[in-house]
Length: 376
Image 1: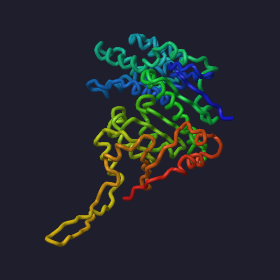
Image 2: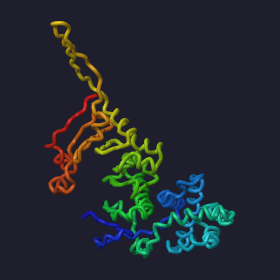
Image 3: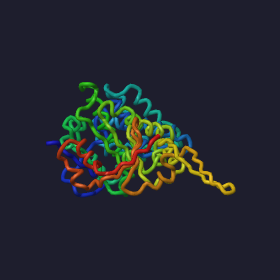
């Protein structure tokens, strides 16, 4: 039987008998894990966004957060203890841990100490970002879920090896506050998936680890999403990322990274209702053009003349793309002609039945749906 786990960390759905409990400092005695975890928490909280020299301040914030997580993991301190450090930049305990522990990353104690001894203005700005990175733990219920005893703590490596299923669910109001935490959990799973894949036949997970990230920009803004879409499929970690619009992705990852994600996606599914003129026009151009005959009639004296001309027209004009009706979508495969399809409802039990191979269920969902191909 495939083990299943569900998490409602701080989202208070109250419907799961086995909520996931995960410690943010888990495995951060490994410097690389501490670096990745700090990046997820910091960038997920958008530290440095909207301020002058934002990248600089975000980098300083990440440095302090990774040092805190590294020190806590090395000394067996829970995340509650880390929160006490964040409230008092002058607390010398994490520096002492990093300096006195032989397994600590070289130079991290000095780096953290340098930040604590900076002038008051710089220190205040950096620690404002540090506290923001841990704001996802402000709710006592979230903090409790992230402070498990060792026996109850989520083990991502065992989870991946056992082919588990994890559901990250929550109400709309709780999504943004815990987004950094959700990002850190997913990144933890991905990193363990990559490590297991590296020692697997062919260098990929079998069966694959599928990530379905709905509202990715709000709920799971993974810092590594651009690279994950580019190479995740090659190691057995296929990823489905869903955005309200490309503009939403640009606001989170920036123009360059969003363009890279768009190019890396092997299948692009576009729904109607897009209002960004730039995006609608660029997507429309991907459908190419087709020849359209234009018949002209004219009369000269008593004789009529009929002429036929050929003009090039968009196969799917921007206004047609914007007006794709609810329940339909346009699919752009990487190396095949675009196709317009009618979508099956997710609640359709015949389609969503877990009996039979996945490819058969997908075929059942579309076999009776007329499909309109666009020629180029």
